[in-house]
Length: 203
Image 1 (tube, rainbow, N blue to C red):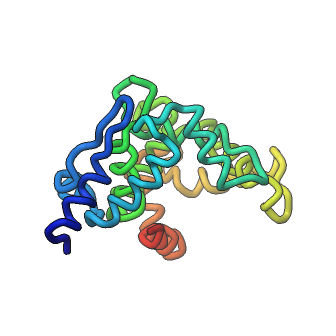
Image 2 (cartoon, rainbow, N blue to C red):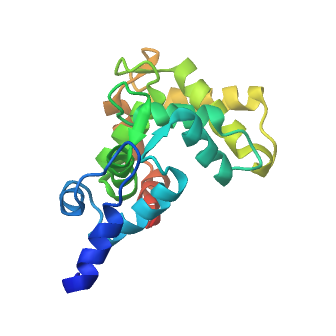
């Protein structure tokens, strides 16, 4: 795929110096993710454009998110997503961190995608999703979509939606949702499985 001088130029472009962080070698990233070398280069160029230092803090992450959802407020949802990305308690995300989660969400198996979704809703990381946690995340999604939702969704509608979904997922009715319950519920819903598959076309 890559050859001679062209390959060297592309690798130089990928490994261009940044102020604080230099990404891992292209070949290593291609082995540890589900992207090709060419795809990684394209993703990196976009990442570098937004984050010239090679690292993203939460405020920058929120700004990037807001560009995709100008009609709403994406800050809270972006906060939740940011917290799902491993950043070693530095408060910043490296290109490797970003690429890893993008690979899992867009190219991962159904199980990997569901594990990420579970982690998104499990706000305190205790391995369980409460109704309040689900409501917080769902509310942030409605806030992010803003005026693009028809009809407009208010707080009461969000609560009703969460009540209905939570009741369906919580199979043993103990007031919390486990990863097994989420996987079981999603596996019975063809529409949900198809929506997970559409993430594969993100690139």
